[in-house]
Image 1 (cartoon, rainbow, N blue to C red):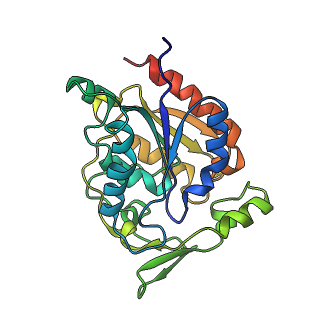
Image 2: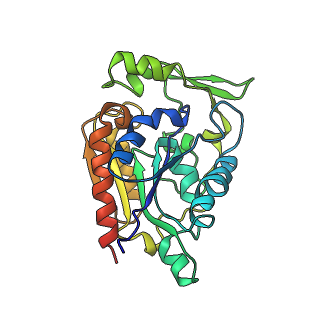
Length: 255
């Protein structure tokens, strides 16, 4: 009997609802893969970073892994990399096999994402100064993304990015100022199963910043490079899906 394919769990970052991933989901489905997505709690609210950690773990990962015994490839985009680094605690396939449990994370993919360090906030990671395209409302405790057409979607067709921009929501300020919790992407069970997709023309997280975070993590990542802006799931969904499917094969070979 053929081994079941893993399920892709896809989580977009700040400001973005899960619907922005629809094209990528469709491409992965065409390749024969099941998918799950979710919108972070800090999108359109004043929820906290810890709320996102809880949501990712309790509402997205555990229902797949413990509820259905699924093998999961977890893809975190942008800000989602920060809460994801904590939410994955103890859920790798290797750790669960050691406990006689079914299912688990068989691959971790950071898609132009922040690679967290314990106690370090996103604000710290961008140099302790807010980017000029962010509009902070200290009364509402939210952040608006201005000029997303250039910051997030520089290579996305205008008709599409106009539609996507209409769905964006303000982001919780606290999610960017709170220090990250303990991080678990460095667990040896992810060796050979840890990948970073680097976006060379990114205006939200410049490529040099992505490189610096990967290097500072202290662990080895499989690196894939895209000549895109911050949203390859919109500008190159087919190519991104092909890369994820290729990574799935690489993860399967890892010992």
